[in-house]
Length: 184
Image (cartoon, rainbow, N blue to C red; front, side):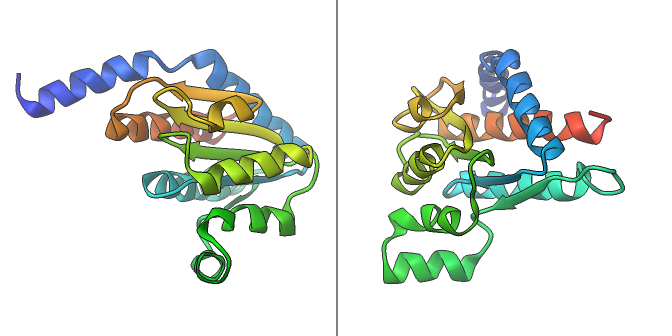
């Protein structure tokens, strides 16, 4: 088997571990947030930051354009000046939580993405979101790390391979987004 064939086969095995009922529950939380006019926040670091930004774009445009109800979603990864100001002047650990302090309110929805589940900036944001009464979702890998148990809903991709975790997280985000893009 070639490397690419093996990678594809292993990815399919990982995707089979994604619990569709948990993804359906996430879809319900997004639907409720949209219907109630709640804000939705998403964040992650590295590849997970890219996934957060991609997901927010899909929801702002694809799942909202020309629709009577729109998603009020913001990727906390997308304000580079804000991120770098907090990272430089305070601490990288607070780059997401400080943004939530400006915008999040009880009942809003917060989704954190972390392959390891142990990113301090993401864990702190989850702790804060939960403490003020936000509904919380985590997309995690391996064993969920510190992040998974903090979330009301943890969608775990139980593999140590970061590439396949990130691949699966993007598929999960597309499942959520395309549910709404295709009529949900």
